[in-house]
Length: 105
Image 1 (cartoon, rainbow, N blue to C red):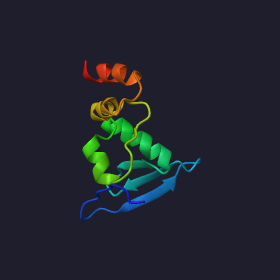
Image 2: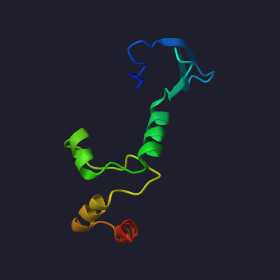
Image 3: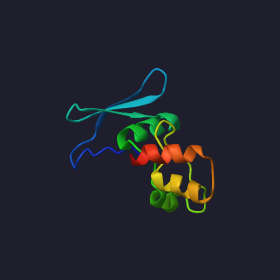
Image 4: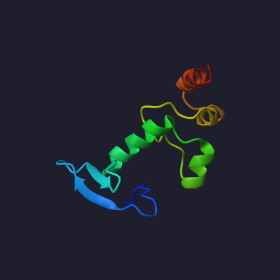
């Protein structure tokens, strides 16, 4: 795993430790700043969804997952409205109309 940690040119890691359940890694740098990062894929996905606050849009999905069918990346957030429109064009579930209405208004 590569951690997004910028210590500057003179900085380095003073201490590194894992939480008792191994779900977090804690790092203290030379400025005595505590950095912490989740270690499990599920926790990383949750952090990403919290930080971004939305699912991938169609262009992002096609860029990172070419040739794969679109799906929600954050289960607790609504699908992107363009995906809902695609489902309508393909005559998918009537529930899609409700989702689209909610996404647009």
